[in-house]
Image (cartoon, rainbow, N blue to C red):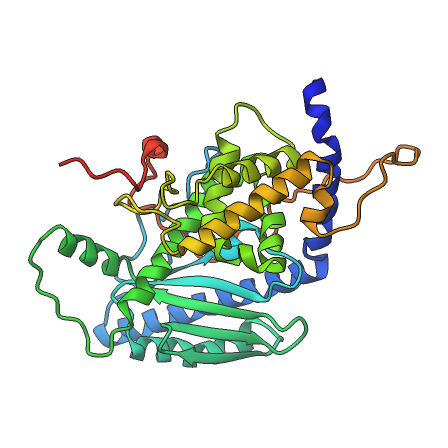
Length: 390
């Protein structure tokens, strides 16, 4: 259609910028190797802990839960009914940039969440970390450094070769959130936590990152141009200090909302301009509609951490970027040189189609537990600025 031709030049610039910030094959292979080695080592640690507990109790060993196939509708894989509910370490899940496929060139920080049966404790963290050192020697020839960070409720894995990757394993348990929800509802609970239980807020943050990853895979991964635009804007947040407060979960929510509400699929250039239009309209301002967080039970604004000055600065910057794009100067927004207006004619050569959505293949080491609370499709019309109905 002719109206869409005006975005062709923007598409070229956005895709050219995306190819620059996209990780190299060597970087992706290094990430894949480190993540898979850690997952296999954690599975061995889980088996070791489970066997120790069975030897103490005299119980017979039960098989590990197996992973079911992911359905076409994008549902999360679930544990089969034959899983052992008494297992201390129930599973490990990828979260953050690895799970969402948002890695950029130079990203060295990776994340995993280790789900525990009970509330994780300092003694459990030390037990897992100590045995991880031994298990790494059996699953891989690569050398990894294991560091215990009790204050942050995580185990840090560092690669000893290039690139110097760092992987954070966050310990948590669904019991932490269940207990908090019951207390918020006014229920009286008798809680007998161990004296060395890990920080509750860190455990809740780990559970939130797990919900964010599942939501992103269900809603944003299949949305045309959404992942590409988020990667390009993540680079913008790194280059321009004004945009830095928007980086992370708020940026992902904003892009999905702006692109997902369009009445048709859009190319990368048009999708980026739509996100800039959304920001320019004043959605970040204190009197704006806010950005509803679909992963929280109660209505909450994903932008509540932004200060007033930050909101104004980002809005003004988005308006300036939108003006540049309207006058054919999107390359200035992207921080690149302008591309030639007319591309030289070349003989057509068949090039392989690259799937930019999936960076790292999914794991088959651990099964993913089902969502505790399904995402409501009608939650889009909710606004954190609206009061709850009594």
